[in-house]
Length: 176
Image (cartoon, rainbow, N blue to C red):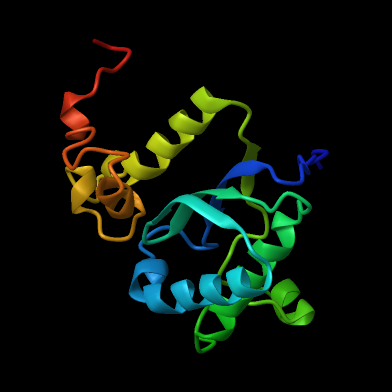
């Protein structure tokens, strides 16, 4: 098994990718978006953090989150967010015997991707990645068309123009 090492930096800003266990054909996150939002609100009220960017796709989510100056425990926050969301849903998913034995739901992948943001360029790249993701995955042709994103709030704040990034066909690729 690989030796997973997490970066624990009080006050750090992190990029995360969190996946559902069953990704193909699963729209659980957008179908139950209010339950997810409520779970995030509840956790945030008890264990503060700042959301810089967030996008909810049908089967995974990305976010850029800043921890408080004296706290690096993002794992606690993700555990509570995932648990709160899971508890809000009836048990309908198929669960392995291992998950049943441990009393776990079969909703989320156990692990997640975490990246400590290192500088302003890294921050901007991950902010853009989060907001462009619905276009990348083919859910919409324009970033502004995806409703479950902090992009709209950032447009109101003047961070992004409303037509930012256009569409997937306007991007340069390595084949060009």
